[in-house]
Length: 227
Image (cartoon, rainbow, N blue to C red; front, side):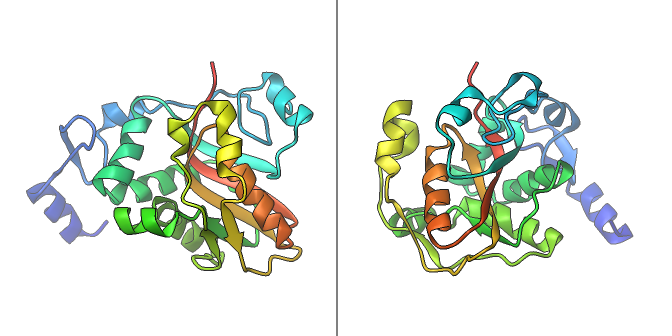
């Protein structure tokens, strides 16, 4: 940070997004940042659900998803859920950069290209931006990978997954995506803000593999973990 940026921060310090206390040039104050929920130490390497010893979980063994791996920064619980809501519903786009920095602080997936999970055009028009794309931009810049903002669409405006029982989500999202990219032999990194059951990302991975993708890795900001 330059001397001018230091001076600007001193004159106009930022308030913590979560508690409102002074946080300098950071999105969160030190106390709130320390309370962000960490993931369990041992996770299934495919779906990032808690798994003893970091082994492939029973669900992925019984019904392997279309994606091959998942990485996440935080667990989806308070106060990380408030950051997601601030990004999606209050248009606090600085939160996208915050999540990207947290994701970059952990293990990086290997891949040839980055594809943000697309929104349906109607929802994109209502929101004004795709939160997954906003998180993906700094990731692509840092990893020096191409960012595919066109070529994949959510063609069905499905009911929000969060409003449905877990067992109904896979049926709701079936055939919801289309892709015109040539992904033959490529390893694709899919970026999203939240992974809950994984049904949406599974269906999107199915679409990408139909276009030739060799491997699909999910890279998400937060992951719901079932207790």
